[in-house]
Image (tube, rainbow, N blue to C red; front, top):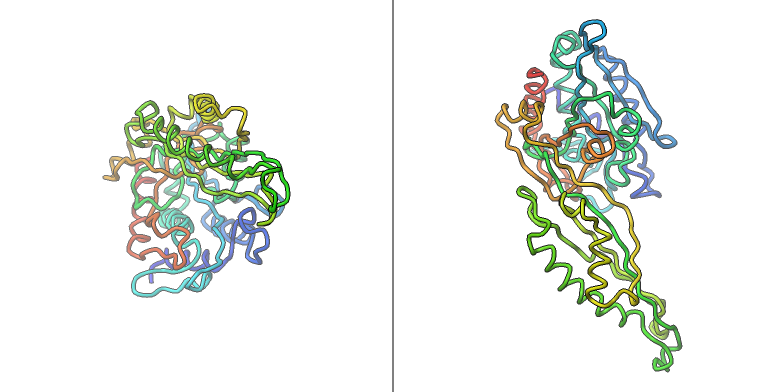
Length: 381
């Protein structure tokens, strides 16, 4: 088997479930993967650094010498996969077995994103510290914590190191397409209130669930229609979308519910983000005459990514024959760009269709192609 398979097997066999998404998991935390990666990078001649982001959860950096003239350092390029995975509950393959079968390597993170991480590390190993130092740009690697929930690693890097990098190539399974733009995401909670009373005399109360019915209908009609109007369309990403993901109300069948809430997932285009998702919801509530009937609360959000296609590093990637594409999901690239000011894209081997699945895998042939892809990009610097 190829070297990149060995590297990926080592990574998959080290559990690193995101503790924010699975706080009770015995497999939670990224430290073991970070420590293994630091040792690997040190062995390649990089300055390896563990930087604590949250207790027991470090980003891992590997900085390769960049050469350059005194007072004129080379621009530094960042390779940035994430080290965490989603939970392993319900998996139908051994999540940490890293079994290779029928040309596929199975396990949690094999696709998202330990596969891209292994391909990046293998490409760095193939080139070696001396050749990396001779490139036109200096090179760093970072394994980011917390991408699957919270994006703590990329946000910490953006706040503390954004000015240090000229470009970031984030590792995500894109079949090596160059995701230079992707939608953002906002989660919002809408709540209605009623008057609780005994279920045998419902006329004495007011059902918060029934109060929510016109809210859902109005969302389904009014907000969806506005998103489909073309007002916020993007030439690559298309229109924004909305999903009503959860609904909760009441406590028992024999009590008229005093409270009901729904949670929305809105995928933002850059135009919608500039206008403001909360502003759109307020405008919708006013138009639907529901301002006094529903309370809107903002939740977690991630800005869209919109790195120009003519960025010189994006053009180097495109020159490799990789297509420039958009995506409906979001990733660490958005935080690096929005908060850190680092022009960023996401690209790597594997298919997003395999991410988070019960039998997560990556094709070995795709993994090996990923090594060639990253190596050719580095050689172009």
